[in-house]
Image 1: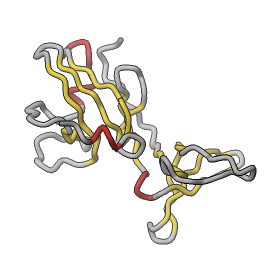
Image 2 (image 1 turned 90 degrees about the vertical axis):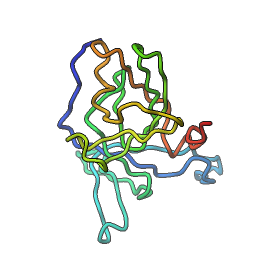
Image 3 (image 1 turned 45 degrees about the horizontal axis):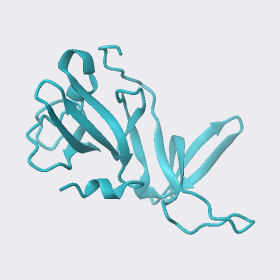
Length: 161
């Protein structure tokens, strides 16, 4: 695994067309699973509705639930998976032998770093740095970040003791 931080200038969003557990059936009456759509975001009705443009030739869009829309951070986890706003990460500091869970959020409430993405701890008593950039460079620092779910499909992960 490279020690370089993987940044991307790609502007990408994701959103759910159906929520986990939502009772939607297809034309045969079979239940349909929740579905994530990835692409560019299109805001409609003064920001009240969102669609994701997921193909360009021809252009095709899917309406998604506004509260499920999350932006790609431009970073990847230790497995090379793209990290989105709303993802739940397992963070491991091998040097301090410490493991914790956090949600990826946009913002910098304490103005302690210049990056726009932060980690909101789920695990109690966390005293680790919440700057996401310190957790994606794995070989040099001994820190790793791995996506284990997201706040929409795995709300049970938010209830850590």
